[in-house]
Amino acid sequence: MKTPIKSLAISMPFPGSVFLGIWVTYKNYLSKEHKQQIGNRRELVMLERLKQLSENDERIAIEMLKYFISSGFKHLFKPSPGFFSEIVKEKGSTV
Image (cartoon, rainbow, N blue to C red; front, side, top):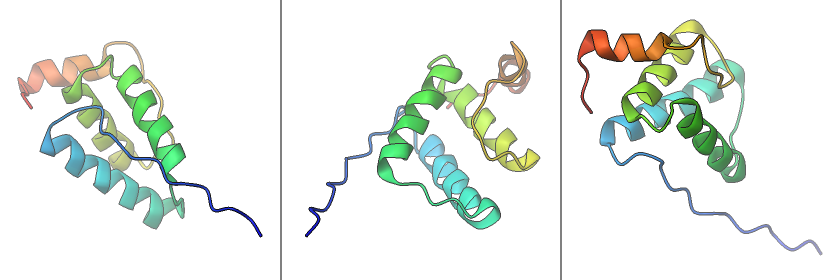
């Protein structure tokens, strides 16, 4: 008999409710559009990677997720240098 693998607690890299909302939207998008179910270990790594790619900036992380969804991307990546920084500056966005 196999021992079930324990789930790990998911901790968000950013405290804002806006980030949490867009993260849930991103996971739903991956599920519906790309048939990807995200286990909690993968989710932890994805959140850690997003924090790194956004240079620990919640506003940039939010813009990145919106961009991935609107462009149909299914993987996290860092676009050209300064791309999201310019968007955040233009919007004068605060989270």
